[in-house]
Length: 397
Image 1: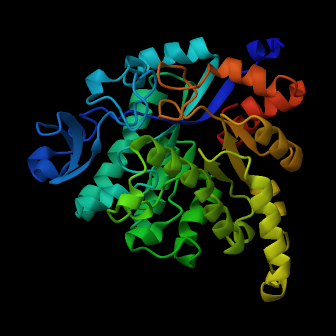
Image 2: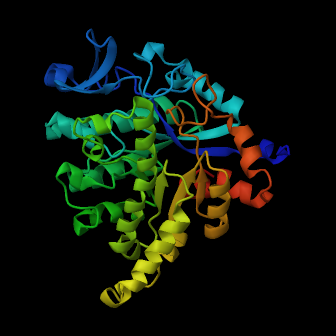
């Protein structure tokens, strides 16, 4: 069927990524003071590829996350920002693509700093680390949000290694126009207290007071620790197969984030604070929530914590949200189980798994996916998952 209602819905894409320009930090932070400790880009002659460097440490390829329309299957990727498709690097061309795809707004997440800001710790200079966070947050507002009014939604990074500085940066981010906070679900990967520790309560309290959601993007811990494997012939099952396997593990890994905020009492202590599970899909949520309810009852959590007044599934339905983009039957099942008030739509542009057709992907245009997978849903449900829920959480209306 043709979904004519889409012409009337301002679709909010709740998980997309910036492709950081080579001068993001060197143009905003004094290289005279910090030298090459400032994140910068260099060409590696040996590999014939362009990389980001934090100090003397090579971090990642500049264009490996900019995979939309690329001609190779992952882990193949552009070798430089200049090689990537211009819609992934040029903001004006990105807006034109959004118009073509029927997408009104993109919620923005990073690549280089990691999905929980942890890579800045490799700089090993607290003052510079804070400057890096502030520069990134300013960049989102200056180059995206302010330059293209209403088309981009900035989610702020936080210097989580310093709670006092994090509180101040959250307050500053709210003042300059950020609509949410990005937080890693595994701060212990970086030598910090576990997420369930009350050490983090000032961050939760500040976000709640400012009505800013906490957004847990997948793979927000130390990526190298999560998927490091010793060299072995049994691990060599192919680059594409390995890459695909890793992606699936990352999707369901956010179940841990939800378990922590629920079982750790964070939802209970901060009942007005919204949490978003980003780029994780929704098909696994019914099982995860039923499992959490079962374990909650079976292990006597209510007896240990009589102050907890809801079951895990009820905490979810009160203040937690999930995002989806490629699912078909599992999306429908999750919507039936969870209802349509806590589900967002996303495309993951321009990552390898994004909803952008190309020579090395099975993805289709967002409109085609919505028509095929969601076309028989009631109009009110479509409006909620494509616009209303995200507009409410990110204060876009």
